Length: 199
Image 1: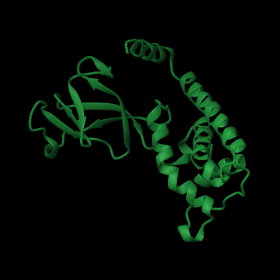
Image 2 (image 1 turned 180 degrees about the vertical axis):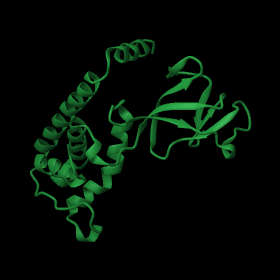
Image 3 (image 1 turned 120 degrees about the horizontal axis):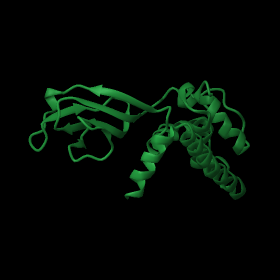
Image 4 (image 1 turned 30 degrees about the vertical axis):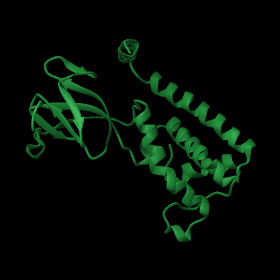
């Protein structure tokens, strides 16, 4: 497991053949240009990767409370504020039938879940900023993604390194998604395959 952002960034720097970084937390003017390049794309890379798949380590369940200030004007009865770390909805518990990913009884608008029941439990992908909680395969994928996003600028367009990073990125996706799927129980996998087959 990675313990810091700079550890992940240095995996990227190693693959790019660059000097290692000592920090990503100093003021921009005090850091090497490569550190600033990594910081410029970090949040976007992390959030886009988290949103892309149903990562086990980023999956959370929460019961939401009705927010009187978010009551819809029409069509739905109740409004629930999304969690502050919310990135993507996986399931809602739809009384009395249990969790179901597709339902006409809710809609997400402007940071609010509109719903026709006054009780709402959700399963969602969270924005996990603490890298020590990341799966090791996700760490490698994040490092490869950082490399893909910065390789051209950092290496001044060296096509051989850019190609190497692209290959690393593609393999990292396969490894990360594969390990994430293996850890799911068989019933969950079969349910996902059934749902996917319908679309």
